[in-house]
Amino acid sequence: MEEKKYHPASPKLFSVSDLWIKVIPRASSNAVIGWENGILKLKVQAVPEDGRANKAVIEVLASHWGIPKRSIIILSGEKSRQKRIQVKGVDIHPS
Image (tube, rainbow, N blue to C red; front, side, top):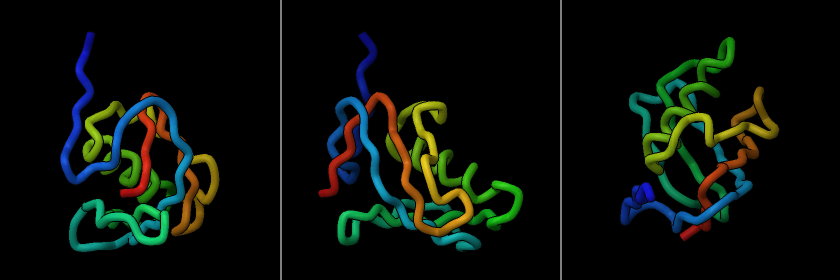
């Protein structure tokens, strides 16, 4: 059985979660900033054109939680800084 990666700075990981995120595009670096009022904030270097920032969001979160990119789906907000995502295979809780 494959062991799930867990980083002490990450939320608890279990099965499936829907959560809200706030994205800061055109940032100087890619990073998960943290939780604020139940919303996960992150920054990406990509510009919000042609889905580039959305792709970067998925890559940053997948890397942060140590899960495959296919486990993250943007449910709503594809053209907004605030997005609702679904993370399959893990259960995310704001810490």
